[in-house]
Length: 159
Image 1 (cartoon, helix red, strand yellow):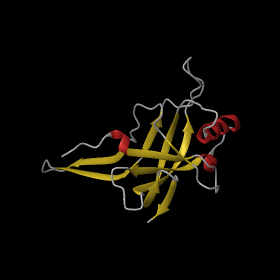
Image 2 (cartoon, rainbow, N blue to C red):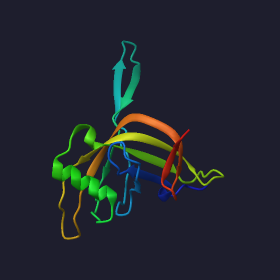
Image 3 (cartoon, rainbow, N blue to C red):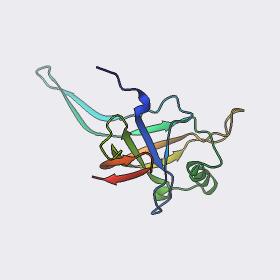
């Protein structure tokens, strides 16, 4: 049984605003790690018999992108810079993230994927002498769509 290399689990974020045509950019160029945290809502109770029951009622999924180095030609950089410059809030921060399983191609060259709505929180900007950095956190809403993703055309097709 072969282990799956991390590079085969891809994360594409839509850098387009609002209802514009999606423009997906893959996360990872300068990242050594991207691991969405599920942060389950867990309630445990112990009854008088000494038994413990566990109730998991939901998740508050987030993912930290740090570092993110600004590159002039990156549409994601332009979107992040606009969030900073205009102090954007609410739905202006809404985007979508597509998680793609690149180890499971179908015959058309598309891969199984899940698109999920996220909100972008820019956590800081500036950085050190290595370059202009804009680290950010993605807050997942739980609104998901299953489908396929073509990494060449960078298009998501709902199932």
